[in-house]
Length: 210
Image (cartoon, rainbow, N blue to C red):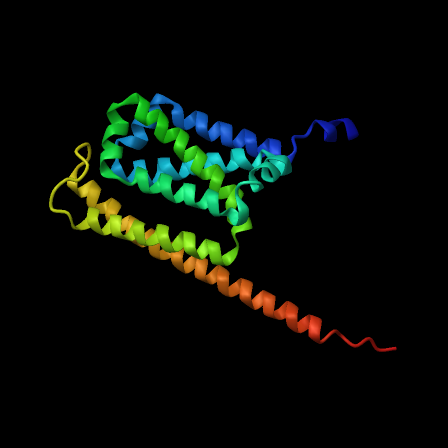
């Protein structure tokens, strides 16, 4: 039994394996063709899966990676700024078009999204609520504005995709921005309530009865 326990993968190894599997599957030509055939799947399925793969790979780095990154990523600021920059770049319609026809740009897109996922994983917890709010306060309005642009445009912004597909993507981007904002605000409220409960518990310790 002890020999079997020794052969079990650690949590870090399991996360690395999951990240590698997701990334490898997304690189397959069949998966790329299926996901990139639709603008909605391209941006809201392929991109998040690549972010997830990058986050899993970063999680597999363990404490040593987190310690190395912490030297230049105080409070998660550098990593979150890099994530915003990467996602902003990949929301540009021209970038989507070029990724479909220029292999070098497609490869860069994959690499950047993996990097953004890793940066987000390594930066979110150290950031704390204030820096997280600053990050989301930049990213989510940008998503909503891009979504409004896609939804309202009477012409195709991305030449590779149909107008109906573009409109659906815009509506989804707006909805997801709103849901993400509400989810984070709920997390903030929960954190504040728990913090207040801990303060009250410290100020009013239970009285032990003999």
